[in-house]
Length: 295
Ligand SMILES: *[C@@H]1O[C@H](CO)[C@@H](O)[C@H](O)[C@H]1NC(C)=O
Ligand SMILES: *[C@@H]1O[C@H](CO)[C@@H](O)[C@H](O)[C@H]1NC(C)=O
Ligand SMILES: *[C@@H]1O[C@H](CO)[C@@H](O)[C@H](O)[C@H]1NC(C)=O
Ligand SMILES: *[C@@H]1O[C@H](CO)[C@@H](O)[C@H](O)[C@H]1NC(C)=O
Image (cartoon, rainbow, N blue to C red; front, side, top):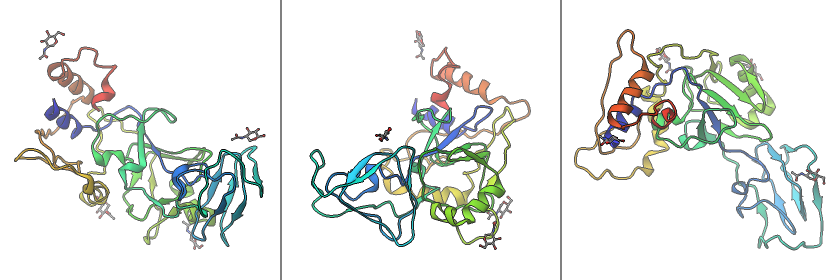
């Protein structure tokens, strides 16, 4: 079973079905992960947004004792959000035993597969089925989503001039190569995106879907990109429990099993090939329903 799975994965070029890649991190006030105490500020807290804070978006009502703002920075209050201040401790808020400090001050790397979730619809739940590690990062034909009502801090410095996606939607707006480049260059954009030193656009937004029924390559299997992506994964690789482990293209960790490399010829239809494999090896007769399990 496992061997077949890898062979499919290594061949999991997308065709014709939209794959959304949604950014999972945010720099929101209400996100417990963004604070040293691993909870959102409340009650008697003295709350500190340090000087290197990115844009912070607030989508919760809370009451705190004190808020220390950075000398330059931005705190965006969402719709009908109220932030109250009180000197008298309220019940229901654990004692922080010190200041409550915003800690999400480092940009999340675009190239880290953990920072993305793949979904079949813009707001759908994350698809956890097996996927090559390099394909967890947006591919050439993917739609990239940064959802509304959040702020972000993203490290784009590892992208090169060939990094391409099909579309990018940032907080509800669809951007083009030029409009994204100019946003990243603006003062607001610089607080949300860290670009590298290279000149020119940071990311190519092609608006081009894959129209080859034989499938289209993700693009992240370029060795220089795989190397960057795998740098985030490699330290968590489990040691394979076999003597002859394999490292299929697009994976970061060695594993046990077999992989099959295929060169596609004229008239090859990826979806047909997938359903044949499923029928013959997975004993699966309801192929169309469970397609995403394999891709
Ligand atoms: C905050 O309070 C306002 C008014 O009390 C309410 O309309 C709003 O829904 C609340 N927002 C949240 C995120 O709870
Ligand atoms: C981009 O792709 C072209 C053609 O494949 C290649 O010659 C060039 O070196 C690539 N640039 C970078 C920065 O990888
Ligand atoms: C970025 O900003 C600099 C100056 O702030 C400007 O010279 C440059 O043309 C801008 N680039 C883009 C792509 O907007
Ligand atoms: C496939 O499924 C059928 C019935 O569902 C079963 O009889 C058969 O043994 C299975 N074959 C394999 C290879 O699992």
